[in-house]
Amino acid sequence: MTLDWIDAFLISGLFQVAMVIGLGLLLHLQLGLARIANFGVVGFWGLGMYVFGVLYTQVGLPFGEPWLFLACAAAATLVSGAAGLLVGWLISDLDTDGVLVVTLGFATAVQILATTQDDLTGGARGMGGLDFPFDIGKVKDNEFLWLVIMTAVVVAILLYVWRVHRSPYGRLLIAVGGNEPLARSLGKSTFRAKLWLFAVASAGMGLIGAMNGVMARYLDVGQVGVGVTLAAMVGLVLGGTARVWGAVVGVVLTVGLFDIVIQSYLPLPKEWYTQTIPVMREAAFGLTLMLVLLFRPLGILGDMQRDKLMGKIHGR
Amino acid sequence: MDFITQSLVIGLTENAPLVLAAIGFALLYKLTGLINVAYSETITLGAYFGMWINTTFDLNFYAVLIPAGLLAGVLSVATYLAIFRPAKRRNVGVLELIIISFGLSIFLRHALQFVFGYPVRFYDVPPPDTIMVLGTGVTSFRLLALASVAVLSGLLYLFIQRSRYGLQVRALANDEDLAQVSGIRPLAVTVLIWFIAGVAGGLAGAFYGVGSNVSALLGWRQFLLILMVALVGGSWGLGGVIVVGVGTSVALAAMQLQFDQSLYAQLVLIVAFVIVIKVRGTRLTERAKV
Image 1 (cartoon, rainbow over the protein chains, first blue to last red):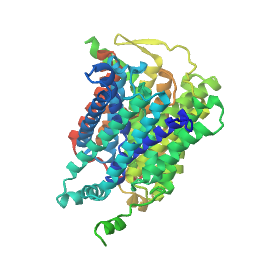
Image 2 (image 1 turned 45 degrees about the vertical axis):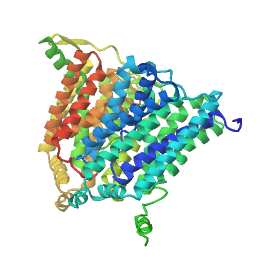
Image 3 (image 1 turned 180 degrees about the vertical axis):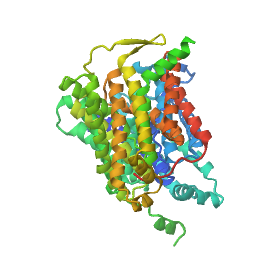
C-alpha cells in the first residue's frame, strides 16, 4: 500500500487529534458526569509515558517485539491506574478547591520527578530509544499504522464511555455530580464510585501517554506541560461536557483546526511555526474556554438527554 | 545552628514574595469565595510591568514598584469587571468559575508574549549590595522585599480589621444582602478587594522578577505553593496565611540547603500540604460570590 495521499504532518496532526479525543472522553467521565474537575490530566498521561519509556529503554525486559511493548504499556497503564486510585482517595471528601490543589499537585509532582530523576528519565536532556513494536517499512508507514491503532483504542474508549452512560454506574456518577449527599443517603457508595472512576480514567490516560511515547520516540520534560490538560478540557467544554460526543466534536474543532488545518494547510510564514503558532494556539484555547463557559456553558451539543435516554433504556 | 539561621534568613528574604502573593490571593479567596487561577498572571504581569517601566523610562527598581503594583491592581479589577462580574450575573457555578479563571490564566500567559516578546527578560538594575544578616549574605532587594511584605501585611491587617472600608469588606463577605441593606455598595467594595489583591500580586511579581528573570511562566511556577499556603493558612484568617507563608518559606529554604535541589523541596511541600488538606478532612468553603 502506498501512502502518497497523506503526508507526515497530517499523520502527526491526526494522531494528536485522536490522542486528545481519548483524553477528553476520559475527562468527560470525571468532569461531565461526576463534575470533578481533574486539572492533572497531564500528570496521569505523563506518568504513563515515562513509566513506559523507563521500562522500555532502561530495564532491559527479556521480551522481543511486540511483547516488549505490550508488557511496558500494561505496566504503564497499571501504574497510572494505581496513581488514579491514590488521587481518587485523596479527593474523595474534598470540594472543588481541594480537587484543584490535589490534581494540580499530582501533575506538578510527576513533572518534578521526570526532571529530577534524570538517571532514569534523562531529565531536561530527554530520553530516546523508543520505537514502534513493528516494522512495516518506512517511518511514515509505521506512523500511519500507529495512528490506526491509536484510533482503535480511542474508539474502544468511546464505546466504554457510551456504555457507562447507559449503566447503573453511569447514573451513580451523574448522581455524584448532581447531589452527592443525596446519593449517599440513598445507600449508594459514592466513595467507591469515585475511586473506580479515577482508577479507570487515569489508567486510560496512562495508556494514551505510553502510546504517545512510541509516536514521539523521544521524551522530554517539556511535553509534560499544562497544555495537554488544556487541550482535553477546551475540546470537551466546547463540544459539551455532558455529552458522549462532546469531546470528539470539540477536539476536532480546536486541536484539529490548529494542528491540522493551520499547521498543514494555511500558507503562513515559516518563522511563525516555531513560536507564534504554538503561543497563538494556547491563547486561543484559553479564550475559547472562557467564552464558551460564559456564553454557552453546555457547549455545542448542549445538555445531556437523560429523559430521552432513560425512555429508550426502559422501553418508554 | 548555622543551618537554622541560614534557613531563617534565606527563607524569609528569598521567599518573602510568596507571602505577599499568598496574602493577596487569600484576601480575594476569603472575601469573594473565588479560586482565581489567573492570579498567577497578575503576578507575572506585575513582573513584566516593572521590567517594562524600568527599562523604558530608566527608572530604578524602587521607583518602579509603585506603578507596577498599581498597573497590576488595575488589571486585576479589569478581569473582574470584564469576566467574573458578567459570569456572576449569568449564575455560573463554582466549578465553571474555576475553569474560566484557568482559561483566563492560559490566555493572559500567552497573549502577553505578543506584547512583551518571547525571550526571557531582565530588569536593568545595578548589582545589589550584599548585607550580612546573622552571618548570611543577603542582597538589598531581598531585604527590601522582606520589609515590604512586613509593612504591607501590617497595613492590610489594619485595613481589614480596623478601618471603615475594612468593616465593609468583612460585612460583604459575611452576608451580601445584609451588607447591602446597611448601605454598603457591593460593587465599590468588591472592586477595592480585587484592586488590593492585584497590587499585592503585582508587587510580588516585581520582587520575583528582579530576583531572577521575567518570563511568561513566572507566576504559574509559584501558583501551586501560593494556592496551598492560602487555602491551608486562610482557615485562620490573614494572620494564618502569614504564619503558614513564613513557615513554608523557611521550610523551602531549609530543604534547598539540605537537598541542594529546589525541586525536591517543592515536591516535599506539595506532599505535606496535600496530607494537611486530606487530614483536615472537612470540606473547604463551597461558595463563589465573586
